[in-house]
Length: 354
Image (cartoon, rainbow, N blue to C red; front, side, top):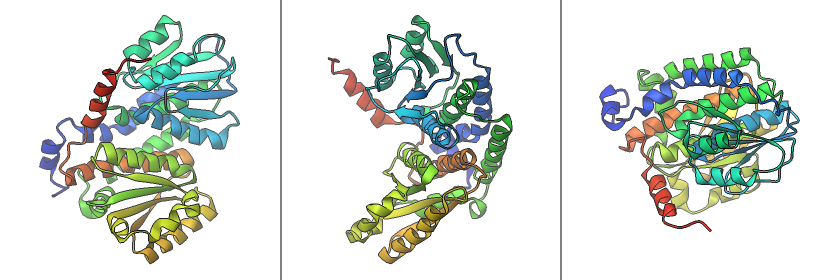
C-alpha cells in the first residue's frame, strides 16, 4: 500500500474524511467566531459549575475544554457520558451537546435536568435536541456541518471555549486561539496527504502500528488526547485500540507487561509526551519505556509540540486524525462509515423505553 499515492484515497475514502481532517484549522476558526458571537440570555450569569452532557465525538471536545479549565479556573467543568445527570442548582450551567441532536443518552440526561431554576443550553446541528431546547425557550446554538460527529472536534472545542469565555468561566485570549490554529495549519501540511512518507510522521506511525493492537498512553493533561487516539483508530481505522493515563498505569498496568507472550507480541504502545507535562511524569515516561523494552513490547514515545495545554492537546488530537486515516488505508477500510454503531442504534430502537 502506497500512502503517497493520491489514487488510494479516491478509492478508499469516497466520503472524503481526508478533506474534513485537512479543514480542521478552518473549522476551529469558524467555531471560535460562533462561540464569541453568542449572546448569553439575560437570565445567565457566571456559573459556579458547568455540566456538559454528550457522547462520543460530541463529548471529546467538551472533555478537552474540561481539561483546560482544570488548570486555569476554579469553576469545574464536568462531562456526563450517559443517561443520568447530576443534581444541579440555579448556579449550574447545563449544556447538552449532540451533533445530530438525536443522541438518546444526551436527550434523556438533559430532560432529567429540566424544571426549576438554572441555566440550560444546547449546542447541536439540529434534531430533537434543537426542537426541545427551542420549545422550552432555552438558548440553542446550532452549527452547519455535514461531516461526522468525530470530525466536528473543532466545533466541540472552540464553540464551547467561546461560550465559557463569554460567561467569564475561562479566560482564553484571541491571541492564544490564533496561535493554536496557526500551529494546526502547519501540522496540516506536515502530516497531510501530499507530505511524502519519509518526512511524514503520521504516515510513519500508521506503518509501525499496522497489524498491531495500539495502546495509547497520555500523561497528565494529554489523557484526553489518548482517549481521542483510541476512538479515532476504532472508528476511522476499524480496529481495536485502547488508552490509558500516566502516571496511573505505573500503579497497575505496568505489572501486566510481563503477561502472556501472545499479548506482548500483539500490542504497540504509543506514549504521548509534552514539555508542558509534569517533570516527574516525563521521567515516568522514560522509565516506563525502559520497562516496555525489558518486556519486549514495541513502543514509541511521541513528543507533542505546543507551548501550552490547549496547543499540545489539539496537536495530539490532530495527529491522531491523520494517523487513523492512514491506518484505515493500510487496513483496506473506508474511514467514514460506522456500521456497528448504526446497527446498535437500530436494535435499541426495537425495544420500548420504560
